[in-house]
Length: 387
Length: 229
Image 1 (cartoon, chains in turn yellow, cyan):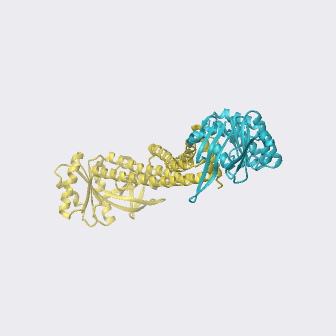
Image 2 (image 1 turned 90 degrees about the vertical axis):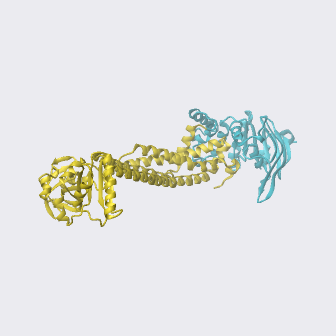
Image 3 (image 1 turned 30 degrees about the horizontal axis):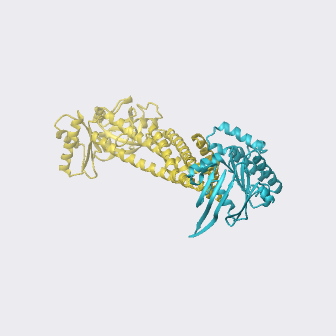
């Protein structure tokens, strides 16, 4: 029997039981679809973080207090004095707040900070200006909107000069940022920046959420990270602060990504295993149902190899069809992701190739036992089978 | 053409050994129309299954077309069945999901004959058994006689030297049974060796060699001249 004939026979066998084949494929369809979507979400998040890190450079150290550690604005001068070379130190005071215009309202991450935040080099302006030293020192009610906030609150219109209610007070929009994507912590696209001097009395605390120390080189960042860790460990005890350079954040993210990938591989393996067991189950039923047909084929000259090929290809056609439908489903979900998922997503051609290989392998592995079982039947027993 | 010597077939059921064939020996020469006759349970179908390589004798020798086929491995037997033998079963044994056309072409699939050629040959074979207008019909859409004709067309498509028929008229009405027997006789006159297993004396009388089986033993093996005596 030629491969073409075996393939034709496999397709005919599947077609003869369309609904059953489709239900059998479901496990593979869902498994493959899930892999494609999850990989796209994972890769999307990872790309956004990587892009943010690229923007910031690897010479920024993040310092944030754990619960109960005092961390007021005086920490900035404390840090500056402790570091023996020039650095830029920026404190932020973050809070979630309801924000509203005359017509729209929503939520935002309000970041109280100084004009020096701009020196991090992470932001770029779409309109207006960033917080100025004067605005900060005078505690003015001015705000700079992250890209998403400008879109959701002002429908993409230029809002510079427009009023905006934040933390129950009226602010004037003075600038709009370009989109920067997801970073470590809250996305700056969803943030609204206001002077830290204005934020402090409105939030009702002088506790900083985070201090960022920008150094001249990545090596200096590493030094600062070690120095501040020792300093705060001695002052408040171990674990009083979370201190990490951008490099360390990157390493943590890579480790997280590796764990996420392993988790994903595990999920995919389980989904495909379940799909494979479904295929094996239905192929065993098929072999039993078609015992007499197998006998007839043997009587007419089918060899063991012919019978193995027939059932193995049928299992692979089911599995592969499931894989192709799963790729369609996953790709469809990825395409619809801007509507369905409020998270960055990135299409991965590798995940499609991987899904294709996996679904073929599932059919091959789980089709082997039924195929060998079919080929091992004695012709006379098979012909006499009365199922 | 066919020679069996001291064939024994034993089955083991629940620890007990049951002997279905006892020391069976006979010969069927080329071009013969032979009948293996016996009552139900006499072992005649077991014998035919061994002749067709569908079952294996416990001991003894089986020579087919000059080859000691009794020693053949399963896949060698598969090739032999495909090239030398044609089967006609009492219950037709057609694949229900395939059309008459595809059922008939099946032996050629395992001979790796190209699709176009086997479809043409199957069409011709069905025409020869009077079913040219039933190519696309599935077995369930055909009468018993038509199904048996499809089975005969399938048995003949590979041009086998020997046709083995197990109660070929057993599931048919008298008239259709006679038609099928006429067809088999016609094929025999064309030079094909045919072995028919039957319990019917009427059918046996239409054959030129009659081998009587009783309780797994050959009790009589006679040519037509001897039968008529």
